[in-house]
Image 1 (cartoon, rainbow, N blue to C red):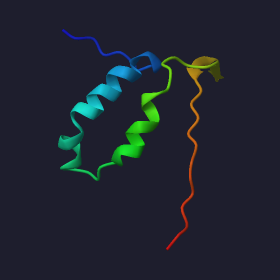
Image 2: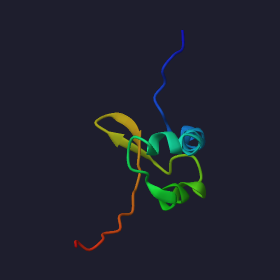
Image 3: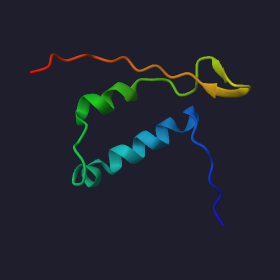
Length: 72
């Protein structure tokens, strides 16, 4: 029986490949995120920077730069 494992930064290339290969399928059900969304992940190195410590458990820090667009 397959064993489920928690995703970590090392899985990023496989997850991105899956998302790209199935992009048209997902876009039929939900709004497509566009090329810019996927392009931001192509040049990033896999692997976390520094470990995070959350209530005695280790974790990974992630940072997402947000661009605020004016409200119309």
